[in-house]
View 1 (cartoon, rainbow, N blue to C red):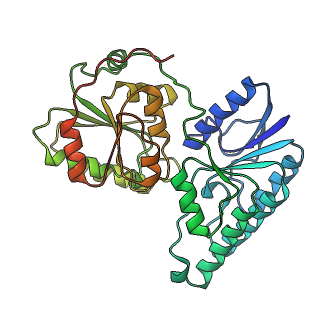
View 2 (cartoon, rainbow, N blue to C red):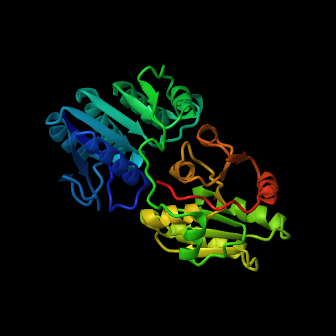
View 3 (spheres, rainbow, N blue to C red):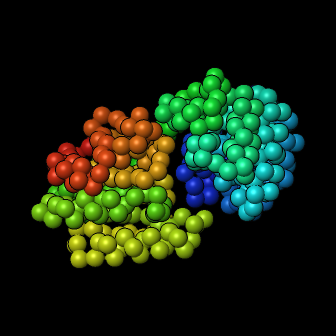
Length: 345
């Protein structure tokens, strides 16, 4: 069985790249012959160059797909849809539809769906793009989503029956990159072993909703804790993320409990910070799934997330969902210092 996997790939700084790398590792351990087709900074077996395969470039995938016995395509709109103009969007959707219609067997892992208003509220151009994307997904023989709410959103959004959709849980391929205890993680990071510590880790962007956590903490100044925001702006977002980080720093000025470590965290550091926390905060504004939440479950660290259907579906024992800064403040007030965790195998 020759499997071709199409995705971003390490050392590309991308959550999908990490997801794909761990999935590929399991396939290879099971004896499958796997080739990686990637782009950008990814280091795979087939490389399409520094630019993402969008528009006509997506058709370059066809030749490689036809040489494989099985194809797994990891879908994010930004990977394949060229949004520079209305025409490039149309062109890239037609190209991707051709791939999804002609390649067999094919699995499409849908990591993120684009948002559309109700069809009745769209103008002619919006309806055309919606129709092309609906046609694109209808052409795929096998769609995978991270949770049931994501499938339900897909069915409602595109008015499709979803008979070609199934759930592949977000953390099913994950393995721990750090095996120490909580106290060991704190010692390595220079953190107080006795303090109540909250952490948010990963790329920092407006959709992460960290201002909700800052507002919640401002409501409970009496709570003795530390909150670490760890990560950096996404390399693909640039100025928007940098401005957001500056805004967060301005909002939290004067609160000594809030700390920023603005640097890229590799896989080991990501898991070390997750392990060191008593609770990980995931106050996301928009997420249908969360790799951070999946890693919390893997590492045994509880999380507090916003009450979005996809995140609620992925909660584990000890996790909580909140709907406002007031609810988050109440949840933080209830938190206590966690017991030391044993090592993860």
